[in-house]
Length: 142
Image (cartoon, rainbow, N blue to C red; front, side, top):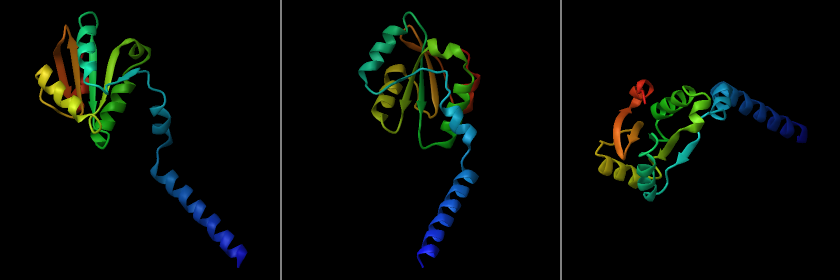
C-alpha cells in the first residue's frame, strides 16, 4: 500500500507540472524580468509635488496600472517592450491603482484629467501635456 501511495503522489506532482506548463508562458515570465524601464513606485501623495518640480527640467511620466486588469497588464508589458536602454534614463512613475487609489484621485484632481486605467500621463512644467489610455498609450509620443 505504501508503494501505491507514493506512486499516487508522484502522479499528482506530474499532473500539476503538466498543468503549469500548459497554462503558463515561460517566455512572458522571462520578459517580465528584463524590463529596461526603471520604474519609480508612486506610493505617497507627497511625491506628486516632487514630480511636478522635476518636470520643470525633465519630462515625467506616470503609468497608472490596475493589477487585476488583463488589458492593463498587456499594455504595460507592450509599453515596457517599446524601450531599450533609454528607458533607464527617464523619470517614469508607476502607480498601482488598487493599492493607491487616493493618489490616483489626487492625480485626477491636481492635473485635471479624468481617471482611466491603464493610463499614461506626460508631465512637463508641472502640467499634463499629453495623456492616453488603454492601447492609445502605445502610440503616445513624448
